[in-house]
Length: 272
Length: 342
Image 1 (tube, each protein chain N blue to C red):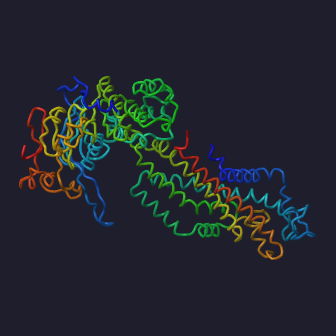
Image 2: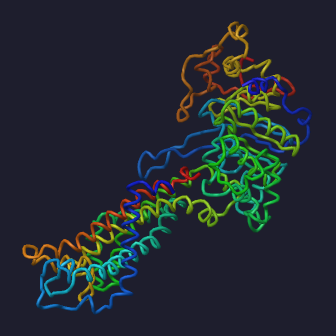
Image 3: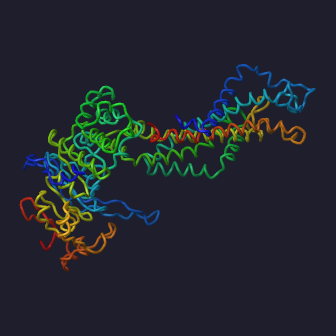
């Protein structure tokens, strides 16, 4: 626990908790219409008391939109990472535990997917399925699955050759029980750490897809969509890009720091 | 330190090595490993790890198995526990041929033979409580449904192995190396086996703790009538715990005898060399001893020489030794040696 109290741990934890709290709570207090209410007299207005972060090209309040966007961005990223774990974890465990031809087959499949950059893969899938929240989740989730499967397989390979697995075998433990009792608990820390880092990348991927018009669709707001809309006004109203950009940067930074510290904390040798 | 030294002179558990039917008999055992494939489509090359191994272990007896690194000690242990397949020979456990036992029968067999590991750190799952670790064999074999149900039974095992009463709910990293080894022993005992393979159980421990764990193994043998296959490379520990000792050299048994005969009257040149390397805890005696150092390298497992595997290093070697494999011949009631010149 003390490791969370390091500077890195505190900053990471604070950022993550703050942003997740905002994403969860904001939609309860801010009516959905607030994000689309236009103020035509104050288009591209700079930060002021009425609009602390300024407004966009349609006179919509950037603070409200970035807060509502947090919900969209984190939901998509979270669900996508969850999908990649649900698919990648069993694949990796089965591959690393059973080895042999099955492992070969699965890993060549994974290699094929890994040959494409994750974002390009997500882009292709998204373009094929058509833009919608659900399809964005699928696109990003599928694109991230091979990375997770690879990491899980490597960890499973490491754990399988540990003497305590041999000891359980000597006792007659069956394969399913071995996986549940010995393999999974000992690869979970790496999976959790990888998940936090994947979450950061998924937020970037969502922003990227939305920027290209394949992710979140207007009038809903997401960080990537906001950055996309801002690109025509960068010279006149740079805050329209800076506000959502800073939100993405802070979330990614927070998640990465959090993941780093989590890795240390979850090390069993550190537990007293 | 004194405990470690005194242990070399104390006798092995007396009176238990009887002429009863062997609990484990190994006859002509050979094991081959698949080595690297020279190419993707070609057949993997095979490496012979063990060749024509035969020995018996009687109930309540300890057979010490000694040999240098790579000689195949651990492979013998894995083979008799049926963790790896044999390429030739037979393994009999209590008169039953277990060479090709598989599936459910093998699982049942595992109740009777257990394993103690060398590394007390890696052999305990760091994410399980001691209670769960020791109870696992009981759950696996359907003796109890949950670890909690076995709490009292485990408590008895912990007491038997000299662990603190409150060890149940703690995790392995809360214990020292010696205590961890005791947890490993408690786990091996949970199913009340009759035969335990101890694969270098004290090699990773401090010298001061070694004696304690060896003595624990002896006490348990006395109390529960266990038979051990005790694998080690430390000759003084082996002398202390074993009733009989087998010397393994690059995949072949070269000598097997009861403990005192082997230590007092070794016949094989390799055994002589091994024994001469054991330090004696007395300066004058130690200085007066002759160290036998044989030149040459340990034969490569992948390219074993013809004839006796020791002939390249042996001072007595003749042409015959490089051509013909010496068989294991009985020289006395309980003394077998594989050498053309003895």
